[in-house]
Image (tube, rainbow, N blue to C red; front, side, top):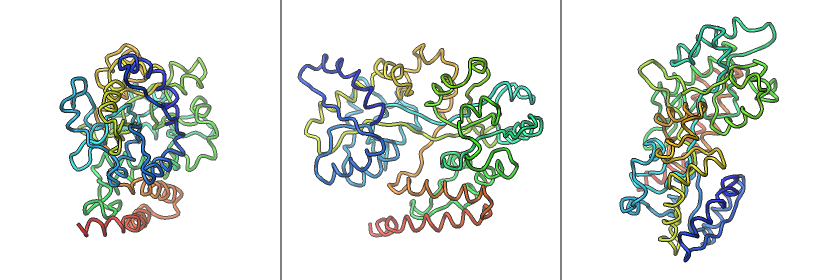
Length: 389
């Protein structure tokens, strides 16, 4: 899918050289069309042998019985082992204790920040706790230039930040076997209150009308911190002026307290085998090949996608990149969202109510209670299915 589809073809000649009896036919699909195309292929009994699948899509295809369990093949593999992967990333590929995907590349979200601005307000290191996070924000807002400026950019068009904070407080988001919303529960309420305080205290602007170009606004000091992923390392390098290349850095997300590491989302894509494939042995050989540390490093150098194999992180292209170190630290503390097909619908509702609360259209409690009601409607069919078992 997308850029990965365009670039993986550079790796395939070596695979075919090693396996002269196997030919790989590559089909590249835009991300925007991939979900519908795969469902159509399933309905028409025309699924591919193997494909790249976003971690949050795996539960949906498991319910359709479209994916082949991979535990037995993994146990007998000479090249891939459980210990080869970050535990939180591997967990995203497991449903009911069964492994359905092999992590291919990973991503998560960390804090991108202006070192010079934080140093100006007395922080030689990035914040490590929620208390420090709000403190540095207050200092930036109090001591910045007379022109309008903020400490954070938290676009309310993105659902991951409030969900990440909810993970940090131990929220499971759903209850009763994932059949009802639990966003108004104490864990997520605490996280959501902390999140909305960024807007109430004017640490972050509401909406994106004043930020037409993230990189220019970051360079101008309109905001000093931003939660984003590894795809922006290259963008910041390309788009920030030369004078600021040493003024920014990445850091793991702060946690609720000094004894609680800041969790983040386990993201990325995995390689899955479709149940209907008649070439499962050949598929597994391809998955093993693309999972080799050498191939993962090569793919990282081509695309910038972070490797899923922990062994690949010993390569100098990663160890000598200062912006990547925060991702290595963060990937040791990541978690997955609820493994149900309805999660993407629910995530959009979280996003909607984050904006409603940020704009003070509803209070935090009113927003979360309304969110739970909408989530309960989304999960109505799931409740029926779970109760019918």
